[in-house]
Length: 317
Image 1 (cartoon, rainbow, N blue to C red):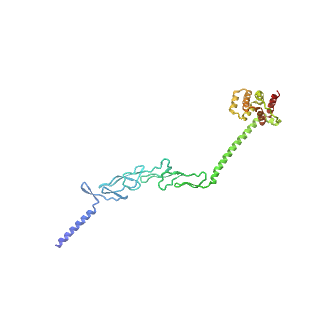
Image 2 (cartoon, helix red, strand yellow):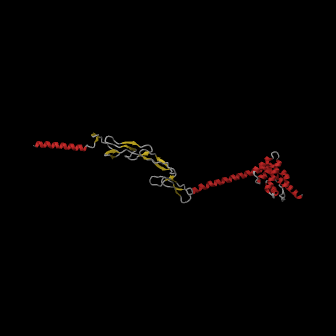
Image 3 (cartoon, rainbow, N blue to C red):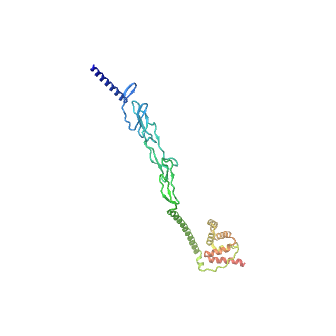
């Protein structure tokens, strides 16, 4: 009887252990078409998730889910397409779009390119800043502090800090070039003036002005008479060169002087008479006085005296 009890106890113990082992190792088996098959246990490096009572491994960084796992096949993942990313392990069926750093008027540029496992990183362009503490969407241009100068330079996260008072260096940088420009203008006009004086002197030398200066005459009162009737005699005394010089100094345009000369290409005397008429019309009733005074000022005293005699003859007549 004791042997039977011992045998029964051993059979019961073996049966109990068998049931326990079957329950313990039930997970490695799956039912396929009513049959139990062995399923290899997977180690999920990036964590797992449950899908239809199956424990599936998550896709790695830079990947997306293509197909869930089942009783016979592990999960299927694929790399994110160009222009998308996933930065954490996931079981998403899509990847996230990469951030663009080329938004219009945002003043951004790319610092780090987008990869399947990381989004693009943007930064402000040179001489721009963004005060946002998180991701910056728009950068603002830095203040240049033109009038007072820079105290603290601009950074990517802060605007320029300007001086509270004008910077002597900035003032000098503005004033010095301005003075140089003014001096340059004065030097230019001084050069033009001296060149004009030199040309007048050379012209005077060519027309006998030097001889007149060596033989000055006493400045006598100039009678105010009508010059029109005396055009022929005065033009003959003046000559084309002195008449042209007189016209230039009185402000008659060069184009008009050239036109007179072209109208009389072979007769300087006629050209002189025509230009004198224009000058008299421009000068008016004071033409006789202005004519003699202008010749005296330009050093043509001999001619001034001759024309003065022509004017006196009109009075005597």
